[in-house]
Length: 208
Ligand code: GLN
Image 1: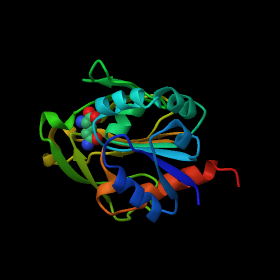
Image 2: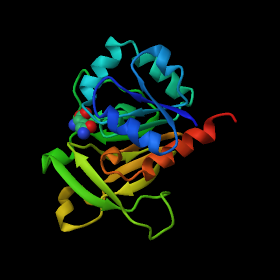
Image 3: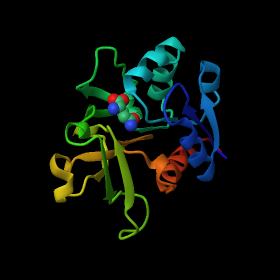
C-alpha cells in the first residue's frame, strides 16, 4: 500500500484519512518535517488557506513541502488545499503562501459571492466509463479556477444550469502531472472515486 499523508495542521483531516484508507492507501497525518519525509503522496485538506499558510510557517513545513512538491511529490488539494497549490490567488490575503505545483490562477471564496455553499453533480474526467454516475460535489466557500496554464488538464466544470448562476462552466477540478486539485470536498460525500484516482497517481510514482 502506498503511504499517503494528510497535512494535519487545520481543516477536515480525519475525513481524508478515512477516505484514503478506504481507497487502498496507508494514511498518516503529517505535522512535522520528519513525517513529511515518510510519505509517497500528500493530501492538503479543506479548511482555511490563510490559517494553513500561517501554520505551515510555524511548523516549519512551508519550505520542505515546497521542495518536495517541486521534486514531484504527488499532491491532492481540496478547496483550501487547491488554493495552496495554485501559482496565484485572486482575492487572497497578504499572509497567503503558495506551495506551487499547479500552474493555475484561482479566485478565493469565488462561490461565496453568491452563496456560501453550493452542491452540484459533475462530469469528472477519468473517474470511469463515460456515462458513469456523476460525482456529487459539495462546495463550501470554495474557490474556482480562473486560468490554467498549458500543462494543466481540466477535469470538471460546474454544469450550466440556472442554479449555478455565475459559477456555470467554471473550472473546479484540475490535474497537472502528479498534482490534483478540486474546488469541492470529495472527502465529505462517501464517494471514494477521487481518492482512488489520487492513490493510483501515487502508486504510479512509487518505485515497485
Ligand atoms: N474559503 C477557504 C479559504 O479561503 C476555503 C474553504 C474550504 O476549504 N472549504 O481557504
